[in-house]
Structure formats: C-alpha cells, structure tokens
Amino acid sequence: MRICPVRLNPLPAVWMGVASTAILALANEPQVDLHLDAPLDYQVTQRISRESGMLLLAGTVSTGGAMDGVQLEARAVRWTTGEPLTSEWIPIATDARVPRFQFEMKLPAGGWYRIEARLRGGNSTRATSQVEHVGIGEVFLVAGQSNSANHGEERTTPATNTVVGFDGARWKIAADPQPGASGDGGSFLPTLGDAIARHFQVPVGLLSTGAGGTSVREWLPSGEEFAAPPTTGANAITVGTQRWASTGELYQRMVQRGRSLGSTGFRAVLWHQGESDNHQPEGRNITPQQYQDYLRLLIRHSRTDWGWNVPWFVAQASYHTPEQTGSPELRAAQQGLAGSGFVLAGPNTDALDAPFRESNGHGVHFNRRGLTRHGELWAEAIIPWLEEQLR
Image 1 (cartoon, rainbow, N blue to C red):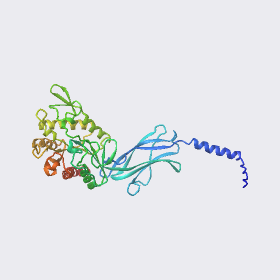
Image 2: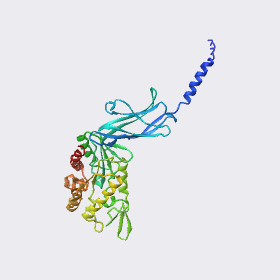
Image 3: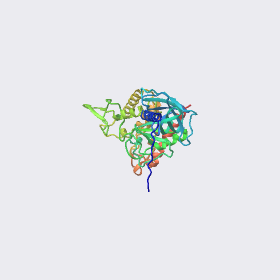
Image 4: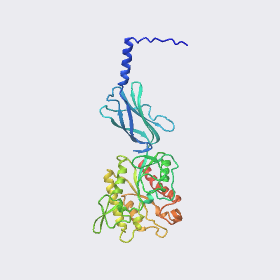
C-alpha cells in the first residue's frame, strides 16, 4: 500500500501572532487560590440572641498580586436541602497586598449550614472553598475531675447529630470519650447536649477539660499557694517548708480552651468537682471553707483572664463510695456560692447513689444509668436559666 505524503501549509503570519499571544497570555495567567481557615468543620458558634449569631470567616486569597475585576463572595446554605440562607452572595473586602482576610456573617440560630466562598472574575468563578457543617447555637466549657470527664463505666453517644465536642484544634460529633479531657470511658455530655439541642433546636458545642482525681487546688492559677498538698501531687509544686502552690497547668489549659473561641465565645462553665477534696488522707485535707475560698479564687481569675463575667454552674459533688456517700459540709460550701449569687447552682449529683455507680454500685464513677441521669440533672439546671437569658 502506498502512503501519500501530506503537505502542511504554514499558518499565516497574522495567525501565528494570535496563537503566540494566546499561549503567552495563558502562561502569564496569575495563579488564583482561595482557602477558608475559619470556621472549622462541625464548629458551633455561640449565638448572641435567640434568633441569630455572628460567624467569623477567615482565610487567605491569592490572585497573583492583582485584584482588578476579582471579587471574593460568600454565602450560607442549609446543609440538608442546599437552600441558600440569603438571596445574594455577600461581597467580602480583599486587598492584593494582604493575602489574609476576615469577615463576620450574621446567620440565624440553627444548623447545620454549609459555608461557600468563591472568587469571581468577570462572569466566571476562579476559585472556591467551603466548610460543610457549621452551626449557630449554644457552647459550654466543662471542667472538674473524673465525673466531669471520660471516666464513666460505659461510653455514650449523642442521639442527635448536632452535639459536638472541641479539643482546641478540631470539632467532632460528641461521642465518648470527649476530646480534651482525661479518661477513655463515658461521660454525661452526650445526654446533656441532646437535651439542649432538642429543647432549643440548635447545635450544641461542648469543650471538655476535666482531669481525673484532681483537687480544686490543682485548678488554681500558677503560683497560687494552698494549705496542704493534694493527693495526686501532679499539678502542685513545693515552694518552701510546708508550702505548696499550683503549677497552673490545668488552669491554663481551661483558659486557653475558652480563649480559642474568641471573646464571649461560650455560654457558661459547668464545674463538677469535689469528690477528691472529700476524700483526702490526714495532712492533705482541706476544710469546706478553704474549698469555697479556693473555688472563688479560681473563678475570679478566670473571669479576669477571659475578660468578661463568665457564668459558672457549680455542682454539689462529694460522693465517693456507698460507705462515704458525700459531705454535707462540702455540699453546703458549694451551694453557698450559688446562694450568694457568685455562681449558679448546678445539680446535686451526690443524690445519685449506688444504683447509678460503677462496679455494681461500689465505685465513685457513674454507670450508664448514672451517666444518663447525670446529664438530665444538668439539663434541668441549665435549660430554665438559659430560657431567661434568651428573653
């Protein structure tokens, strides 16, 4: 078979010029990039009223040094339906000389929402970025010892899909163990979160910072001295003969976790602690009055460091075993802080006796029944107060 050669005619000079120009323009096209650093996936932002809250958008944008004709825009859509919450995309100011940007977007209370951002140039979208799950709701910081953390006999899981935990770096559905606290067992937080989410129809964020076995003394800021060393000794330091002070590690962790959400970024602190301070050997024990003084000191410092008058709920907690069912004097000290108006009254969990405790009723930690009732008691304390705040 004979193959006939094909003659290729050269392009006219004018076409060659156009083609060269197009190739050059493509090669010189600036690289466009958009990235959202905030919010994070599954993040819950504390609402400012019953109806709404302000969501912070922050990130970086790059257009090769030129912003002429390029506009950054954002919107929120309902995650389940894709329905936009606003009729138009919201423009966000940018400057080619400064790659970082931030913007506050007002959103209705609720969620989940998907946040979508785009860079528009002319009639085309040049770059996009999005965050799948964002909510406007209620956020609580939880502190104390093991029964505030993950030391329950069985792990629990939220029944709703809008209760999440935050460890200071990422958010996740609040299935036990809760991120950011000690222990790897169960907690009362899934039950509490479900109750609040169902009652108010908003997502709930929980920041768990509890540490098992700790005394109130170990939660004091660095350098604060106390009358006797706590049992664990892990968060204390000897500073002289018969003188001890807190290392401040637990306190700083708690304060930093709250600060990570920004100013007034959570609703309240939930404090559940006291069992260790009712069960200290001779030479390590403190009086109920000293307990109250230390807790007052802790709360005052935290409010100063957070920069606002943070509400604290304080539980009545001192139960240790069926043989040591708690201290009426210590409960009175905890309750007295609420009676003076300095804090809000949390639940009396000493009322949850052997049927609610681990190891067939012989332990200090809660079994599954106890964890559920513990969460319900917290909800019964918080929900009426929260209704008043939202009026």
